[in-house]
Length: 259
Image 1 (cartoon, rainbow, N blue to C red):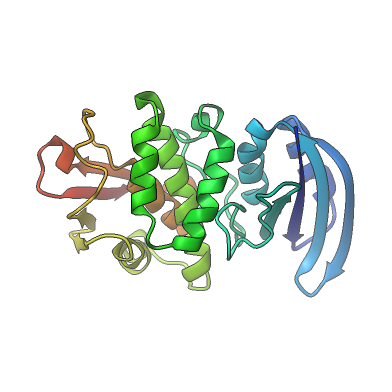
Image 2 (spheres, one colour):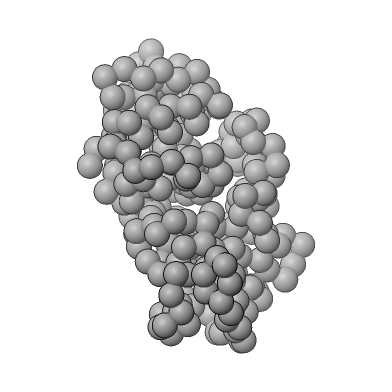
């Protein structure tokens, strides 16, 4: 079991505690105490809850993407507390009126499979070292069982992408998908790898995730990160597809974006 404190900012107070309390209970946590006050930010609700650590990532995502939540932070009573989402990937990034479904359905089942504590530690390390993060991710990939590589790397990529979007791009206006790819996804990916944009698709030349002795497309982290970057603009309606990969013999890895 783990104790965790959530800090939520919402535009309205009415029904907020009831709605979020139901989310907390649905994920197996018990609400221990709470406090609410009005501020210049809006209604600030703090909640202390206790529950199973293996369910924490699901709960954080559910609270951070709730329709009534404008900003969200999570800190826990251990050495891996995460009070500041701009400084630490371990906290779910604050969201501006994000849609209720901010995680690709294929990612959700992974949370029950991976080592959640190891992921949280790694996310903290990635935040401190960003954008120099690929060596750590490749090392993690090598350690994972084959059945967990795709869901785990996609989940981490999604968390990183959502964090980068909130840190670097959230203050911009709403964009069409093609402009989001050009003005958000492309510059973010170029911080990590050589990336080009051609006919609406991103081409990555030197993905380190290729040739890992596994069949099919294998750039799961990059696909998850692109999804996290674009969901800040388009919610769960955008889908990222790796339509070609160097792991299958292509010269470059290509990512396409569908709605």
